[in-house]
Length: 428
Ligand code: CMC
Image 1 (cartoon, helix red, strand yellow):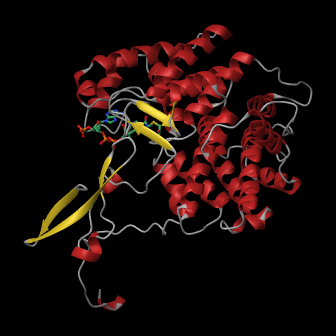
Image 2 (cartoon, rainbow, N blue to C red; image 1 turned 180 degrees about the vertical axis):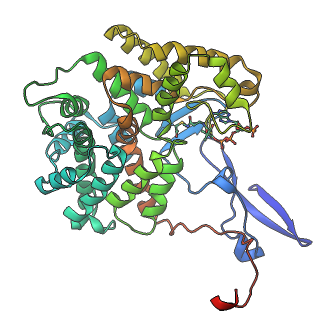
Image 3 (spheres, protein in one colour; image 1 turned 180 degrees about the horizontal axis):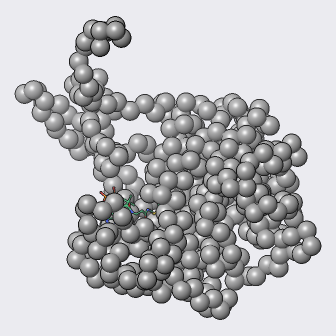
């Protein structure tokens, strides 16, 4: 007999179906709850709510497990590459060699962005935060490719929209950086791989080509893989919910960029470095800042610590900590904030407050240190996260479209004033 949950409301018993995922995750299906009982559920921040069924990413926060399409993140980070992972996430299976070659060739054919879009960059002030620029230029793609406005077109047309996005996003991102430093933009070089091409557009100058360093490429490739998907987080849920209104892919991804921007989500990597710099400038007394983080009257939090779902360790942090050491050793960089980071990590890992609340360093605690070593400025950190998360957002958007999911529209419990009569302004 299939499992059921029982709920008693106003003395009446209702049965609710229980559904079980392939990894034995259980959920009470409340799809018909309101219709049958008149009740809704209240779950601020959706901490207990499954918004969808999904075949893309499995993560178990208690055990520190993360898998894309069944493949452990550790194996993908060690043996795959970002474009292959993008293909896997979006199409569901690892590509054959021919499929991967064709996928990457198609991407290479679309790396340029329309020359008219260059004028948008010229209009932004150089102090514009690159995340704001990247989100708005990404949304603008929908104006240059009006065919993308209908997300229900044939598969090959949607594939073209997806290819364009994967191909142009590194260009959009690198040009946002060039704009912020007042340098001329650098055009894509299709002789280079995806990651090297991005680095080249970031760091080449008209007078000097960027020389690709395989250590840097490999670390960045790993970072992008680690960020490529993370199931129903804030930005991904945003992409799905915006897309559920049948808004186009470019607009949905732009919305995801904005959701990612916040310091509690993708903006944390920037916040980590800013925090480490602040502690350094303040004299480097780590214990003072740990005490501040524990003080409930102080809004300060240790950035890069804690996670909504990982309550044991963040498997991505484990992998990236090693890559971080490798890059710094290989490049011979001694970053003084690293000492502070290490002290902070040690202090927090042994402090009762952090242990009790299962607050461990997350992926963003280390990613910022790598970005900085590579020469990527702090303002670009969240853009780097977005570059990595792009295939995940696309895969989740496509799954939502394929599942024909209804428009996202949560309920609420109204707690405001009950009905009252309008009072004329003179009488108030
Ligand atoms: N420093 C100090 N205390 C913290 C921290 C922190 N970084 N994170 C959580 N806590 C405390 C919090 O005050 C609360 O204490 P109490 O139970 O006494 O009220 C308890 O731990 C639980 O915290 P919460 O805010 O209820 O947990 P959450 O699941 O809602 O928030 C989080 C998760 C990631 C937003 C939060 O841990 C945080 O703000 N971390 C710092 C920002 C950060 O590093 N974000 C990046 C996440 S990884 C990238 C990504 O996937 O988006």
